[in-house]
Amino acid sequence: MQPEKKKGVVLVVDDTPANLSVITAMLNHGGYEVRPAINGEVALRALAAKLPDLVLLDINMPGIKGYEVCRRIKADARTQHIPVIFLSAADNLEDKVEAFRVGGVDYVTKPFQVEEVMARVNSQVMLAQQRQKIETLMSFKDELLRTVSHDLKNPLHNIMGYTDMLMENIQAGAVDIADSLAIVERIRRSSDVMYHLVVTLLDLDRLEGGIRLEIRPTSLNQLLEDVFGQHQLAAENKRITLEMQQHDAAYVVPVDPARFAQALSNLVSNAIKYTPEGGNVAVVFGHQDNKIIIRIMDTGYGIPEDALPNLFKKFYRVNTVQHRREEGTGLGLSIVKAIVDLHGGDITVESEPGKGSVFNVVLPLP
Image (cartoon, rainbow, N blue to C red):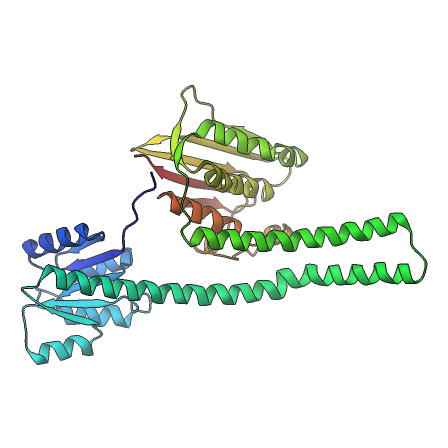
């Protein structure tokens, strides 16, 4: 069964525990993840730790008042896009004007009606998420244009050049079968590069659009053995040792076997690609706290610390000499993350330049 997806994350700030409890129950019932904060200081720390989709904010609190919390939210480039709805017992015009002046998008007077609050929360979260999608699409468009102008232009120029060369040979009556076959092979290789990029882009678009997974109980042991089998030849060609932790018991996980195998395959392929000859790639897995943890480890080039936050972004490639020597689209890890996210899981990476990397995939168990 596919994990239930929450509508969004709401940070609720109110110094009255009874109010926090009521609002939390209401939002949970409405399908939201709720993060409660008992005062302004706690709210600002919560914002620094993880960004919500919306803030429900009381005005009159001890310590930092609601207005000041909102001012700080709107003054920070990292949080200024988050909508703030004020909740207050004050029902005078001055308070409402001040709420909008400091950056609030709505104002609800206590005591409130559940239906009214839910309608306003739903509306603001939907608007915020749509704005985020638009920004993401604009960013994707810019990256796509850069990719088209570079990653597609180069192989296209190769195809045009080799086609002209072949045509000139034919027109001059100087056709040599061996030379012609070599030219055709170069055209085919350039076409393969373009085709792979287009197919990968379409696949990522489907994944990020929220395709429906075919979840069923799947043997993780067998899935990993199959993935290793796909990459055995590539590893042997680089004299890389592939090692997989063996378990007597079968590990059965609820996944879409085709998609999850795709994610694991991308990770193993990357590990082999970015590990020099004679290195080692290993996979270990097991249970921990009602979760399955899969670790793909390599003795490769490693990843600089400043590159780690960008690693799963579309089109991002690590900018080192060793990494740039390897062909790639910068989309493989984006696809991995999209698949893991669809399964309700998480992926992280630990790495040290010159020593290798560890990719950790965590899957919740039902």
